[in-house]
Length: 205
Ligand SMILES: [Zn+2]
Image (cartoon, rainbow, N blue to C red):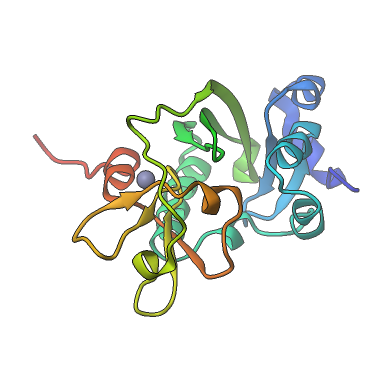
C-alpha cells in the first residue's frame, strides 16, 4: 500500500524522515486541505494492535480527508485548532486518551505545521499504558435502551470514549464492548469534561 504522496516529501525539510519511519507511534501527514499524504509504519502497527485492520488500510489511504472521521461540533473545533496551527505556524501539543476495553492508554499528540502553510504533521506517542482502575471505571453492559438518543444514536466521547447514558441528566459510562467495536449507529461528540479540558474557553481575567 502506498504510504507517501511523493510531492509531500519536500515538506519534511525540517524533519528527519528516517526518524518518522522508525518512530514506534503513529505518524501521519496531511496537505493543507487535511487529505492524507503520509503514513508511517507505526500507523499500521497501531491499527493492527487495535483491531482496526483491514478496515483502516482499506478506508484510510492517501487522499482521504482526516475530517471524514469527525462530525458536528468535534469537526468544527478540530478545524479551528488545525487552521490556527497551519496559518500561524504554531505547534499544537495535547494529550488524549485512547484506551482499549481493558487497557488505559494516554497519548501525546504534537501537530507540527509544515513549511509555507502547505501541510501538517501529526506525531503520536504513548505516554501511559496500564490496566483500567476498576474503582474509577465501572464496566457497564451494552444495553441500548439506556444509551440511544431520540434518533437512535449512541453518543460516544471522541476522547475518553465513554458513552452518554440518557436515563440521567448528565452521566457518561464506560461500555467496554463499544470501545472494542463501535456500533454503526455511533456518533462522536465530547463529554463535558473532555470538552472543558481540550477546548477551554479563554476568559479575559
Ligand atoms: Zn470524554
